[in-house]
Image (spheres, rainbow, N blue to C red):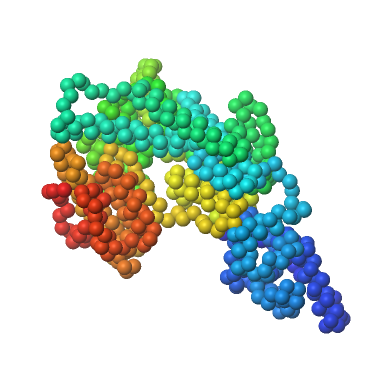
Length: 616
C-alpha cells in the first residue's frame, strides 16, 4: 500500500500581452503565492528519485504536502529558473516548509534527523491545538513501547487501555496479551511441565526420592499470577516516570483527531491528539456453536483458572492449541486435541508433523479431521463435566466425548471493528479486521498509524510489535528514518519438544525460489542430556534450506529440540547478516550442545541418505 499522496499544486496561467520582464515578475509572484499559501510546498519532477524520497518522508510524518511537478507543466523550465533566483538552488526537489526554504532532498532529510524540520513544521500558526501530541489506543507490548519512546522524546502522550471481560468474566491489568494471557504465563507453565520431565530423568542421574511427586495447580497459578501482577505494576510505574497519561478506559474515534474514552462505570471523556497509534491486538475466536461461550474457556481464562482443569479437550491446531495441550499433559492431565485439518498452519509442515508425533508419543491424543458441533454441560463444578459432540470433516461420522474442560484455540480476531475507525475512514480488511499499512505503519488516514497483531500480512509476535512501536515513535518525533524489518523474524513454539524457526518454511521456499534451486540439509540428533536418561534418540531434528544460486544462502532455519528458542535466537542474527552454508561449515561448534549440529550438516534431502543417529 502506497503512502497517501500529496495534493497537486496548480500554477495560475500568466496574463496575455505581457512583456518578458512582466511575465517573469508575474511568475515570481505566482510562485511566492504557492510558497506562502501552503504549509509544505515541494517543487519536483515526477521521475526524480530524490523527490520521491522527500514525498515519502512527509507522508510517513502524516504531513500533507503540495507538489508542483515541473516536467508536467508548459513553463517548467522558466519556473525552475525563477526558483533558482529565489533560492540559489538549481536542482529539484526544492522544498519550502511554512515559507522557510529547507533546500533539497539531503538537507531536508538532515533537518528531519536533527529535529529542525519538526520544529519548523510546528511553527505553523494555522495548525490546530490538540490535547496530546500522541494518543495510543491499546496498552499492550507495542502500544506501551511506542508511548514510552514518544514521551522520552519530549512529547505529550496518552495511553488508553481497557480489557473487555471474556465470556467467563476474566480480565487483567496493563501490559496486553503477552504479559497477562500469552507468552509469559505460557512459558512459565511450559517450564512447570519441563520440571516434571526433569524429575523423571533425575533418577537415572542418581537422584533418589521415595515420596510420591504430584503437581499442585493452585500453587502454580498463584505464583504465576503474583509475578504477572508485579509486571503490571512495573508498567504503570514506567508510564508515570515517563509522564505518559495512562487511562483505564475504552477508546473509540468519534471524529477526526478526537476519541471518546469510556471507563468501567460508563462515564465518557473526550480527548484530541495530533497523531494516533492503534495497538489494540486480538482476542480468541469462538466456534459459534451451541454452548461454546457458556461452557468453553480460551487462553484468556486458562492462565488464571482457579482450579485444575482436569480432563481437557483442546480444540484447534494453532501454536496456542499445541502449547497449551503440551504443558497440560506435561503436568499429568488427560489431554486430547481436536484438529480440523493440519497442524500449525503457516509453519513448515514437516516440522509441524514432527511436533504432533512427539506429543502423541508422550500421551496427547489427537482427534484428526473433526470439528465440534455442540457443547453440553452435564455437571456444573470446578471443574464440571461437559459432553462434546463433533462431526467429521471427511464424511458423516459423528463422535462424542466427556471432558472436564474444553479449551478453544482456533484463532484470534483483531480488535478493530468497534473502535470507530469507520468514523474517520480508516480502511480495514473487512474479512479479517486487519489494518493495511504502508512500510512506515501508516494507515490510509495520514495521522493514524497501527502496530502489532492487527497489521495485515505482518508477524503476530510481541517482539515485532515492540520494535515497530519504538521505531515508529523515533520516526515521528525523533528525526530517525529506520523502519521495522519484518523479514526473517525468528520465533519458537513452546511445545513439549520446542520448535524454533527463522525464515521460510520448506513449502514457502519452493514457492519463492523453485525446488530445483534449493538444497535442504537435515539430520536427526540426540541431545547429550537425553542419553543417560534413555530418552528418544532419533526425535530431535535440524534442517536448513539453502538457495543454491545465491551462494547457498540460508533462507530457512528449523530446529526441533530442547531449548530451541535459545538456539534459534543466535542463528537469527546470523541470517540477518546473510548466513550461507559455507559460513556455517566454517563456524566451530560449541561441544556438547544442540546448536553445534548446524556447523556439521552434511546430508541433503536430495541424496536420500539416512539421517538416524547412534551417538551424541
